Image (cartoon, rainbow, N blue to C red; front, side, top):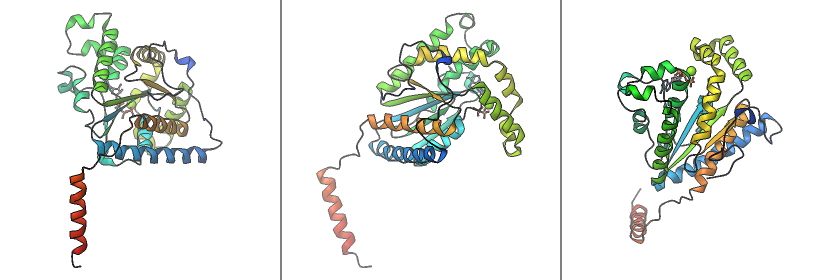
Length: 290
Ligand code: ATP
Ligand code: MG
């Protein structure tokens, strides 16, 4: 597990007021931050190529955040340099009828990255302990056994199920990296107003965004409990200050790059026999008349 000042130590109790939302880091201006992100993206592309060639491991990156924290644009920027063949993004919205007819990890399981690939979850199974917790009517509407709905221990149980699931992924070669993009309430207001004021951004704003904003404190509590209970050695959480988008994107690229580096993967070794075949092919190609 690569160290980072934004890593949530397994077992620690998280209070979000102790975590910064604003951070610009070591950069003196925007241009410097942009250049650092570019270098981070290039490094990521290099490691991703090896991940793809080795075809033994995969990486699952989970993004969770309040609305307008910048999940979409972070995914866009951080993954901008990687080969699209080695990367896949899934967004999890309110579950469909078919999805509700299964246990909650089902739709996530189907979307897990194959070996050699980086899979990104834009929201995830963690919504089951966030939006579903903040809205009791969502839990009431789930097709789960009645006794589960009234069990006060349901959130602890879900944390445990999720930890076990992520441990299983880790045991089997999937590196799980989880980001909570920590935006402030004031910055969210600014970004919502921007979405309302700029016609080309209008589509990004929906009336329900304001309803969720009104539940800000409930969400913060749900996030704190989630972070306190599901940051593990196998699948740690990183809480990234999100008010400065350039800093946030650079941090995410750095952490993913560090975690990929720590895998110490190598391009597959070619056997002596294969090398022999390569030489034969080379001679044959060079002997061809143009
Ligand atoms: P974002 O706001 O992340 O950019 P979006 O606005 O494009 O995404 P929405 O239409 O807001 O997407 O859909 C995401 C919504 O689906 C969120 O409000 C989220 O809480 C909800 N959601 C996701 N998973 C679940 C779940 N398991 N149960 C209930 N609601 C869920
Ligand atoms: Mg939304």
